[in-house]
Amino acid sequence: MMNRRDFIRTAGTGAAVLGAAACAPKAAKSAIEEAKAAPELKGEMAQNYPGVSLLGYGCMRWPQIETEDGRKVIDQDKVNEMVDFAIAHGVNYFDASPTYIGGECETATSIALNRHPREKWLLATKLSNFSNWTLENSKKMYQESLRIYQTDHIDYYLLHSIGNRKTFDTRFGDTGIMPFLLEERKKGHIRNLGFSFHGPVDGMKELLELHETYHWDFVQIQMNYIDWFEGDAEELYRMLDEKEIPVVIMEPLLGGKLGNMPAPLAQRMKEREPKSSIASWAFRFCGSYPRILTVLSGMSCMEHLQDNLGTYMDFKPLGQDELAMLDDIAETFKKYPLVDCTGCQYCMPCPYGIDIPGIFSFYNKTVNEATYVTSQEQKGYAHARRKYLLAYNKAIPTVRQADHCIVCGQCLKECPQRIKIPTELKKIDNYIEALKQETL
Image 1 (cartoon, helix red, strand yellow):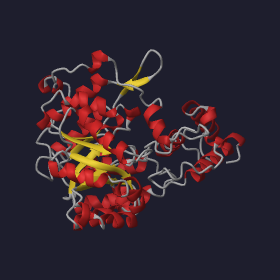
Image 2 (cartoon, one colour):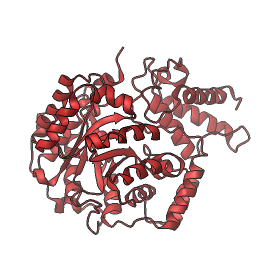
Image 3 (spheres, one colour):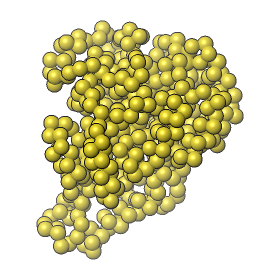
Image 4 (cartoon, helix red, strand yellow):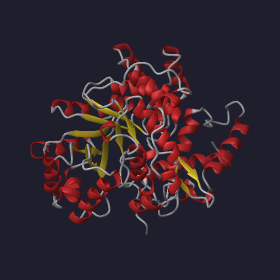
């Protein structure tokens, strides 16, 4: 059975970067020419820490195109274009991993970045030794990253996805890799050493007990205004702030959900700031805290990049009344029947072929857009019911739908959001079946 790490490397999310023509190094395009079609961007890129852009580029979702044989591959020309535009407007922090996008993320990112002087970009990448944490393999993965990026140093190196001391010991502490990484940091080949955190508050406490030994230079956490007001993000931030450890933020949009809010909540934001996007509220929230090193955004199109640049190049921290509004919105948001999935794909592949993130994404989208069918008493029920079922079958092939879950539990141990995936799938399946039988 293929495990999820092998899936990440081999699945259809991207088997290869485009051919030699796309991969050949080119001179970076003129920022002036590219800026002609862009909205006016004012000001300078905000920084909490000198030399590090407050907006960071998450490279997990580079744009892709489909080849003639049906494979999805990274659109290298588009990646180059967006990297050029980002650097021209002050973004210099780029976050990748050897396992992202079928294992091709680092190559595509390197091609784009190495068209610019090394001092123009800060490289953040990861020791993603999920399936093989031997000392030999971990060293090989680290050295391969240096080779791919054609550099003698990594600016921010992360122990990838740990949530407690046990996970740390298994993949890093007991393998012999930590003395090697500490020596690499001493030599300057690793400029900053930290970890990406996926776990509960108690797990963070365990890992911070190691701070005196390893002197973490930064820590990456999930933080957004929903997790802050209704979850653990505030406590995680405070713990790191107390130790003066810079914080890198992932999932500022909670898997995109905070850029596509339920209509009544989005309306409140639009009434307050008519010219600002819904997503900008989430990015302003994250940037308003001084211990934040950078806020990662997986910008897969130029529109998202330009919108985020508009937020951080003319940055206005949130005031207390705005924070109070987001607190109230977060409380209301949690009452919506949404699944807290961020689309990270860590649960995949399902051994029974279920498209877990696809199902959750479809379901959440219908709730947000108010196409979710609530009862037979609602206006236009028959039409809404047929439309919903047709849309579900179009979005998720029959053989990959929720009714195929047998509750094997494999996905539970992989989910960084700690979602009770079989329970949520059963809930959605029951809903779909009620629509089919007209028993809702």
